[in-house]
Structures are given as C-alpha cells and as structure tokens.
Image 1 (cartoon, rainbow, N blue to C red):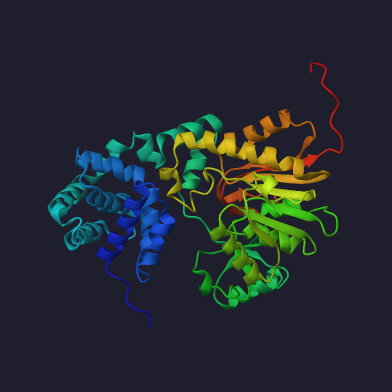
Image 2 (cartoon, rainbow, N blue to C red):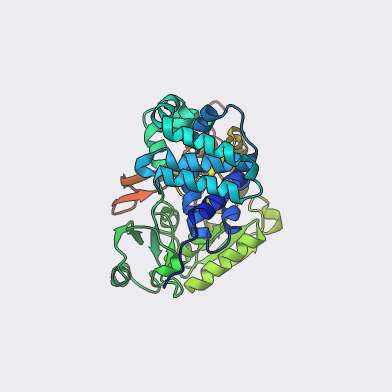
Length: 446
C-alpha cells in the first residue's frame, strides 16, 4: 500500500516556502528540491498552481489587507488565495483550503503570530469572494497573471495574438517524449506504454504526447534509454540542423546542458563528431548522465562558447546549434516562476549575450555550413529582431526557410515538422542560417 498523503496544512506550508523563495529572487527548482521527499510532489503541484495565479492572489491580498504581513505569513496567505479564488480550478474546496491554511499558520513558528490575521483575511475572502474577484478583474496583472511589463511587451510584439499567448502560458505543460530510435521505434514504444495503461499520441517525427504527465520512473523504458522527455517544439532543433550534413560531420552544440538536444543530434547523426559545450561544470555532468542513459556518445567540455580562443582547435564545423540563453518566456507553462523572476531589463541584457554568441560562433562555421539559432522565447528581441540585425551585418549569412517564432499552443496548435501534426508545444524561435562560400559583392552605398 502507498503511504498516506501528508496533511494538507503541511503541503500548504511547503508550497508557501517555494513562493517565498521565488519572491526572494530564487528559482523554484532548488526550492522544490529542498522540500522533504514525501512532501515534494504535492508541494510542486500546489506551488505551480500558485505561481500561475499569483497576480490575482496578490491583488486580492491588497484588498484584504492594505499593509502586507511579514513575508512568511504573506506567502502562506497568497498561497491560499491563489488556490481558492477560482472555484472551478481549486484543487480542494475553498473552506478546506482556508481551514488548513490557518492550521499551517498555527503550526509554524514563522507564522504563528499572524494566525489570527491569516484567519480573518481568509474568512473575509470567503464571505466577499465574488465582489473581491470582480474588483480585481480590471487589473491586467491580476487578470493575466503576468507582470505588467511582460504583458505590454507581448502586446507590442504580437498585437493580434498576445491574449492567446498569455492564455496558453497559464496552462499546465504536457509531457512529451522523444523516442530514441536507436533502441526502439515509435509504434513499439507506444504499444509498450499502452500495456502500462499510458495513452499517447504521435507528434512530429519522433515524439509521443502523453495523456497526462507522470514521474519518469513510472513510465516503461526510462532506465533502458528508450526515450527522453522533450517538448514537441524543442524537438525541432536537431531536425532542422542535421538533414543534408556530410558523413562524419563536425557538429557543435554550443549551449548544450542539460543535453536533450545533444542526444537528439547523436540519434539523428550517429556517425557525426558532436562537441557539446556548457559554461557550467555541474550542468555538463547532466549531459554525461543523459548521454549515458541513452547509450550515446559525444565530447562534452566545460567552456564559454563565446570565447572560442579557450576551447576551439581551429577546425571548422559543418553545423552549429546555438540554443542561446534567453528569458525563457516561451516555457512559462513548464516553469511558471520565470515570469515573476525576470525583469524587463533582462530582455536587452540577454539579447546582447545572444548577439555576442552569434558573432563569436559564426567564424567557426565552414562555408556552406548551417547554423540553427534558437531560443525558448516569444519576445521578438530574442528572435526575429536578433536575426534581422545579424543578417544586416553579415554578408556571408543567408536565411533559409525555417519555423521562425512558434507561439505556445495547447491542443490545436501545430509544430512545423514534416507531418505538421496537431500538437501541444511551448514557445520557441528558430532561424536556419547558411554560410555562403564567398562574401557577397559590395553594396552600391558602401
């Protein structure tokens, strides 16, 4: 028999601790990892729900109490409000959430002094819920649960689609597998999953979209390296880079960790010489682990891709994948803390880093070679505008057909892979650049 679930008040305490960490500017990932193992799955599920509804929760708290309580109590109060305000999506009945939130306040030395305050605010919320929700509807941050600057940038970049992007970004992410075709074909793996009562649908050329997310060890074939978890949109990177490469091509995966795209490159081009770089040694170990589980090989090196003088041997590459650091604005379904951690100034700072990487890596590409530039961002400064500026200053760069911006889509969206199947994918930008053999002729106005 499975052990009983931890009491809800403990789950709320754990979820509130994650929220408090995010408010301090920390990623939710280590905050969740710090939660006791028996509490961790529930804490993550509740914390992600809270982060997707945090704009509304904070607006409600401001109406319930003009002055914020100490941070631990405020995190617990906003956790309860985020979980309870939308009754049709609440994981527990609102009265249960309120009762257990008060219990959570009472049982923690950090919030015990605010127990009565938390109780009063939440009881008032139950009494005046409809009015309070209606009052906050007009606030963009409360309505869309994204920072105001983020909403404004999407309105500027996507004047006709910004609402669709925000709505998709507030939905939980699906779980998509990429089949390791060196060990199994897609249909046999799908049959193996079906035998374990896991329904799936084909997506793209190697993907399977599961009916619902599950722990990886609850899915057959993980330890055997039959598949990897990879969003359907992310699976495009290797598929855009590999076709047409010569035998034993030299491929650079410039910002490779945690290694999903590196592994995909090795699966699609098994005779290629793949060099995977990442600036973080700990994340390079993740690449080794992923390749080992899948039975694949690549050279992995800790280095800054933007500083080739420290790692490049002088031999040009046939293909380069630049999955550049970005705001991650396209994957907030999967990482809902990102929207609250990013600042508007990050966009320009990251765009400058992307430009630096493109400028440094382009000379390493052979004439006739291909570079795929991608980001998991929906902001044009990190996609279309970045590539337009690069093309304007690089005569040897030719833009080839590619997906461009992929907006996050749920259910009815499409990923631009050969069979163009309906899919459920995150937001990305892809540009396929080819290096011409000779410099273009001088322009008349040069």
